[in-house]
Each structure stands twice: as structure tokens, then as C-alpha cells.
Length: 198
Image 1 (cartoon, rainbow, N blue to C red):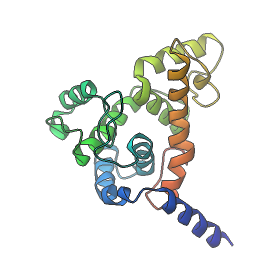
Image 2: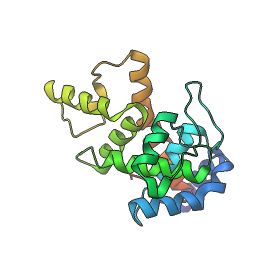
Image 3: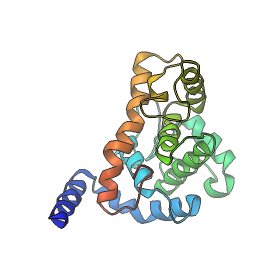
């Protein structure tokens, strides 16, 4: 029975994962393990790319975000300066460059947010990727001032808005939930490795 359930989950995962994803699977795994180690949360990064661009290397958002990781041009330039050896010149529509930028930026963000669990840290990292590290810091301060735990994201920091518009706040709070609770399990079940929120 357990094997039938596993097979059903894997079949569902494959149906929802875009075909383009398989083209980049090996490169994403290599990049993630080089940056995060052999236990890299590859399923998390795959889920994040899924949310950002649905694996379309030439994706461009209405506000100008580009590539698989949907990096804004100014952020792409900053990342190339921050990681000159791994990124070099700015190439957001180059899939390898875009995946390296996403994974490196996530690592940089994760190193700047403490949390009680890897899952909470991952949610804060993703919130920062989507809306900026400054907002995560401000939201954590507000949560702490209101008596909530600033080291717990779900049902704690995620409830506090230090000043964003209602639309931006909703988008930012949906982002970690969709990646970690919706897409990450699909990629885990499809054999992409583990995610941050096991």
C-alpha cells in the first residue's frame, strides 16, 4: 500500500512539474551542491524556480525581472559584483547563470537570518528573496515588539507587516508558503532530493 501511495505522489509530481525542468535538473543539482554542500536542498531551489518562472529561461516579468530566477537587473548587477568568480558578467537569460545567481543569493540571505528551524530560516530567506532582506528584518522587529517569536516564521513573523502595501504583503507571504508547502514536496516526491522543510 505504501508503495502505491508513493507511486501516486510521484506520478502527480511529474504531471505538475514542467517538462522544461528536467533539462536543468543536473545543472541545478551541481550548482546547489557546490554552493551548499552535498546535502543542498535541491528540491527547494527547484520549487523556487518553478514559482518564479515555471522553468522558462527567457521569462520576463511586467516589472522587468528576468530569467529562470526572475532577478531584477539592478540585483543581477549587484550579485555579479558580490560573486565575481561564480557569476562573472550579468547574463540573466543564461540558465546556468540564473540558477547560480538564485542559489548564491539564497545562500547569502540564509546566512543573514537566524531561525529556530531550517524550515523557518528557509521561509525567511525566501521572503527576503521576494521582497528584500530589510523587510524581513523590520517584520521580525515588529513581531518581537508585539510579543511574537522573531525566530519563527510560520504563524509568527509572517503575520506582521512593518509597512508594505496590502498587495505586496500578500504576495510576499504567499511566496514562501507556495514554494515550501506546495511546490517543494512535488519536487521531493519526483526525486529531486530533499528540501528545507522535510
